[in-house]
Length: 291
Image 1 (cartoon, rainbow, N blue to C red):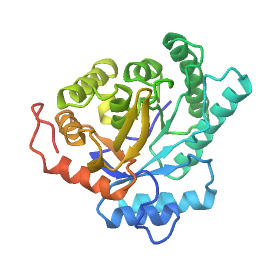
Image 2 (image 1 turned 180 degrees about the vertical axis):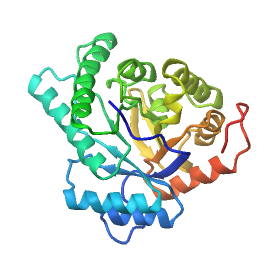
Image 3 (image 1 turned 90 degrees about the vertical axis):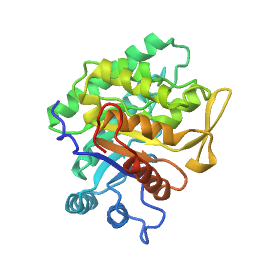
Image 4 (image 1 turned 135 degrees about the horizontal axis):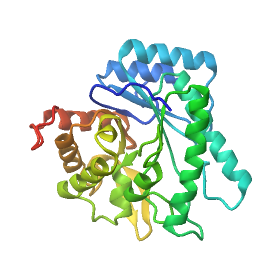
């Protein structure tokens, strides 16, 4: 499956319409993002894919004329590991519809949550998600829909989605790459992934397994995070969390990714601006990556 051209830099933006947007449409959200000097926005289809063809065309024009990189979050009602085949098929349909509508709106990448282990071991869970992902990418490729499809790293221990698993899920599937959620990885590790070295190791694994393509077409989420014994509890503003987001950004700068880093903080655009300021204000990393 061919996909959209790679971005030229790492762009920052909110997950959804900015809080400060005077009107609550995706088009107005894109306009507000550009006004603030941000370069990305995620279209939140998390409660369902509800965007008309006319609205998608307006969003595409607004983003294209302002240089805003769009991503999509597919509905939360996805579980590719359900025991009910009908629910699996419905989940595949939701991912595909998110991709179709997102692509019509000019989006470059769509992320989804793969599902829950249930009674499956990690290897069987990965195999089953891969089978569904292959169906999605092949069908979208046949339709000519050009958009990256991405399982996300997840914060709950009951959910499929540590970094090695999402890499295994996408490895060798054309048109598929992971979405890295740094706060989720922090929560899933019960706080142990929380240093520049730890984030650097994660990015090195991504590059080693999937090549430079995974960094040149990079889609990630970041926020503060509260976790408990089973992993993720809730997203927090960056400055209200023990998650060392500055060190995550410092590690990212070393690798020089291109794509979108989306703020899922409750403060949305405020924390997106905070991340962008830190990332762009840092010095050149050891790899000589461009800011």
